[in-house]
Length: 107
Image 1 (cartoon, rainbow, N blue to C red):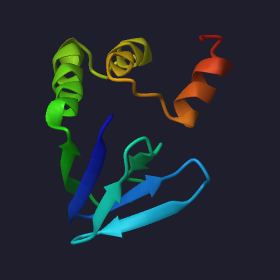
Image 2 (cartoon, rainbow, N blue to C red):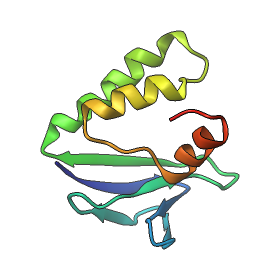
Image 3 (cartoon, rainbow, N blue to C red):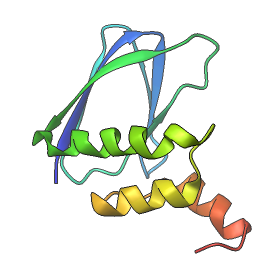
C-alpha cells in the first residue's frame, strides 16, 4: 500500500472521495491522500491542469510506467487493459468506471 501527495502547479484539480466529498485544489495547494484512502481526481474545468505527484513507497510509480507502455498502441486505453494493470497494484476502478462497465454488460 502507499500514500500519495499532489502539488497543483497549474489550473485546478478536482479530488473526489467515496462519500461524495469534492475538493478543488488550485495552484500551490498540496493534497495528501492517506494509505488505503479511495479517491479519484479529474479536471472538469476549461483550463489545462498539472500537478506534481509523489508515492510512498515509490514502487507505485511503476503503475503509471506500465500504463504508459500499454497505452502506446491505443488512441485511448481500453478499460480492459486499464483494469488488468490496476489489478497488479491492488488498485480499484472508480465508481464511474464500474457503473459504465455494468451498463455495457461487463464485469
